[in-house]
Image (tube, each protein chain N blue to C red):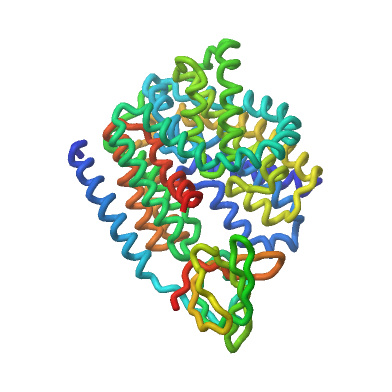
Length: 398
Length: 114
């Protein structure tokens, strides 16, 4: 019990750090932990390590909104939130944007935990049928996303360019952590460079609380749980395309509602990926892959423990995120924005070089320039998810 | 930087980067291992192994065969539609990923070079 408490506290610290540092994903922590696990397991139990990973990943789903809002530096999961968050920041209401994602995370978490019994019961029956349709569902999502776009041809070109980069990266011989340079380039550094090129200063920030109606919560929470559920069940469908699919369920979605939904999907995806692991024995994200390697067979007791840890760490993460956002609001306009962004870019580049070597670095550079095209041409960044969707679709058909 | 210049630069570097990566990825030589050198540290890594097919079996979708060299034997699995002309005692050079199946290391074949 004591080791679990320690694991949660350490997980909270690492979750905050990975969330705040753009380009550093919880997967990086998982890889390091797995490498050290023979040593760590002589001091602690596999359960404590798994609880640590669960906490890092859950907390990260809350805290990663902070760099998205204040630095314009998202990870894939928050990429679509950057523009609406940026609008809030330019109105001096960066904290309000963060509050919306936290509220979305908490409400969607509660709803998703309530439906877990139904999911555990039904997923086993539904999945064999769903599995046959996965490639078609993915193709449908791609077509749907392309047709929504005004500049359809350009969106297709961006999808194919990032898809080609994804195919090369995922098949690159012996490249460690291939998704790290891929996403750091496509979603992280590209956004930072654009924001460096266009942004000179951040206006004074005031701490405001969002005014929400019951209707707004009721409209967004089920959509977030639906989208997060899709991401946690289907391979290669990630948060951004799912958010677009989810938002299409809501008529005339506002920026406010979109941010609630993004916050929700992110957290739900992680929590429900335990259902995929428990029911289908399929790990749908890096953290759960790590857990499945540490704990070979997941029992119902493990499952309940991990869901409880998700709940506890979400509460801790929500409090920490709100506190940290207030600190950011207070100090962000005093910091030299250019210097801060340049430091972040340099750190991510250094880590990519360190972890993935020169070939990973090349992938990141190529990804960065592909990632800048949609922002410059005002096309959705979600088409960059071709980097995962195209390789998976081809895997099914070739 | 002007937006148009940045856009041109993005197109040029994206396309050049992709071409360079395709070239590097195709020309990278995998390290060749003796079968007794294959251990857990190589799990999920791509390797090159040469040897003779000492046993061959088929399932509806897969060909499962053992590759033997002077240092040992390893089981290899390959998708049937990709590799149809394998025979017992054939000398082969393979490239593939080391995976674990039921506690044993196996090679999941990507390419058969000869």
